[in-house]
Image 1 (cartoon, rainbow, N blue to C red):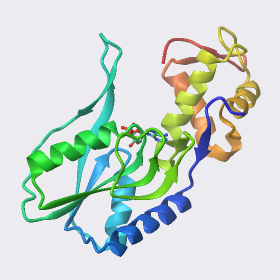
Image 2 (cartoon, rainbow, N blue to C red):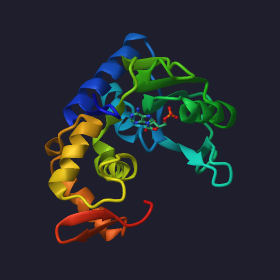
Image 3 (cartoon, rainbow, N blue to C red):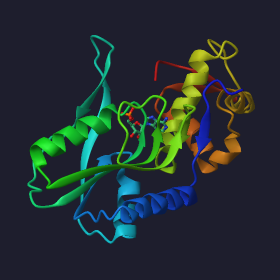
Length: 228
Ligand code: AMP
C-alpha cells in the first residue's frame, strides 16, 4: 500500500473528463455566457469547457491555500481580488477538483458578491465527497477514497515535492544519501507510482531540485541540502 495514494492523470483523461463535465452542464440546460477558471488548477479544464460549450468569454480568479507563517494555519485567500461587472450574465466557475472546497467556496462567494452575475454555477472535474465542504453543481467524477490526482499541468511541481517528501519522511531516507535508483524505488513504495510513468519530468525534477539547492548531488548520490 502506498503511503500517499497518487494517481497520474493523462492529458487524454483530462479531455475525456472535461467533455463529460461539459455534457452534464449542457444536459442540464445551462448555457453560460462566461466561464471563470479558478486559478491555477481550473485553467485547463475551463478552457476545454469553453471549447465544448462554445463559450468565448473566459475569466479567471486566483484562489489558493496560504500558510500563515505565524500560526501555521492554512486558509484560503484570493490573490488578486479585482472587480468586473457580470450583471445580466450567466457564469460558471470551473475548477479541477474540490478537495476541502475552501478555495472554491471563497471564489464563489466573492464572485457572487462582487461580480454579480445573474446566475452562477460551480463545476469541477472531480469532487472528493468524503471530505469536501461543498458539493459543486456539476462534477464528472465522485471520489470517495482520498487520492492525490497528479494532473498534467503540475507534473514538475508535484514530482519535485514528492521527492523532497521522501527525504523528509521516510526513515530509510532521512539524513542519508540516495542514488537515483534508490529514490525511484522509494518513490514507487511511497506513492504507488513508477517514476517511468512521469517520463521527462523525473529527470527534470531531480535536476531542478539540485539547481535550486534543495538537493545536493555528490558522486552520483543525492542529499537533502535544506528545507525545500
Ligand atoms: P481545495 O481548496 O482543498 O478544494 O483545493 C484547492 C486546490 O488544490 C484544488 O483546486 C487543486 O488544484 C489542488 N488540490 C487539492 N486537493 C487535491 C488532490 N487531492 N489532488 C490534486 N489536486 C488537489
